[in-house]
Length: 324
Picture 1 (cartoon, rainbow, N blue to C red):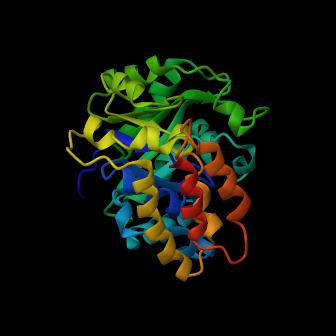
Picture 2: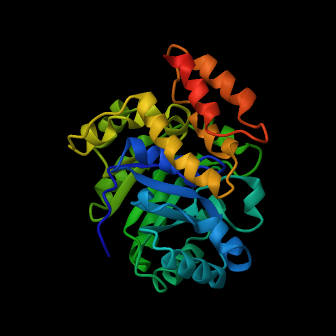
Picture 3: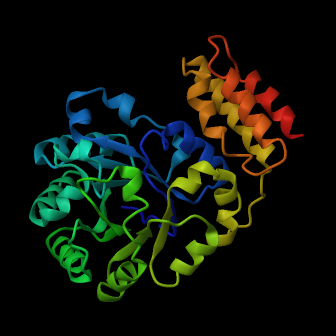
């Protein structure tokens, strides 16, 4: 099992971190660890596996995130993920959405650490890939540090899982939307720092409310890695274009925004020949020119023209003209 550098990663985000976005991210950063959108174990057990798991080789290192709590389904899903050669298989124990709670997916599982143990062991026993967990610091009113410490202690001692990605907020299971769950519960970064102090042998990755590299560098003084979510999608160039040099001590040429998009267009042309709609890929470009001259015109032109039936990548090239 190869060692994965977890210094920096991009969070799994539904409808955002699809395989097309991940290619765009990889053009800007060769070192960041990328995550898929959450894929449910039932979807891989009973659905179209290739549709959910196919990706591009350029995306490595890449982790797949699974949602589920049925051991048999997780075994099947894990085997599929292993066959597709993902570098890591992650169990979602952090999603607060009421929509997935009925299937015992996400943060609700923090209330049943023994079930989480069974899930992780079933996964680890059916793959040679590293199995990891992403979770909150607690749910509802269980927001004391001792609660998350107990959860990590149980999981770490009863499974092979040694990497814990911790969103530094509690999840409110009823009454808050997923968006509100990312904003309303207070961030408690000190809880995550304390986990690293109490479990120095574990890899502790911090997540939640982190928006830029300066914040990442601050967190890296206390934990093993940091994960950025929304801003890595909404302002991808700002976050990613120089991250390999800053965080990984690489000495790579820095591409301009225009160069990034021209490289992505090559990928879009290949995918379009395979039937992928231009809009499916172009939507990920909306934040590239955030706060830049011509950025609004670029976004407006794309949004007004990328859905046309006969659209080609010429629509992106035309939009680029507004940024010159």
